[in-house]
Amino acid sequence: MKIIDEFKKFAIRGNVIDMAVGIIIGTAFGKIVSSFVNDVIMPPIGWLIGNVDFSDLALTLKEKTDAAEAVTIRYGIFLNTVVDFLIIAFTIFIVIKQINRLKKIEEEPKPAPTTKECPKCFTLIPIKATRCPNCTSEI
Image (spheres, rainbow, N blue to C red):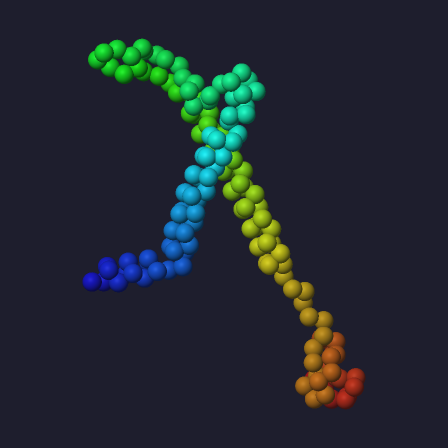
């Protein structure tokens, strides 16, 4: 039972849930990028270089026979996958860069205080003062 309790603590921690949400969103984002590459980017590029469909590009090593399928290297699909990767990697780079920029803004240390409050009259006095100039009490 101790293992189950430890697993429950592990599974409901914020980091694990955040990671799961990130993976789900990342998977969905990957599908969107794949569709964007295959359906929006590659067709115009193929059209510009002579009506080439990149998903059909392949190098045939052995022709199809009655007993076996053709042996091919489908480099067109590989090119689509490389473009997918570059778009996803660039997007992640931009997101991480923005997150780091926001963290840097949050982490900037506050300057050391230069004044303090007099405990007797509650006026602000220099931090190094040993006597209040307003009420003349010692601090």
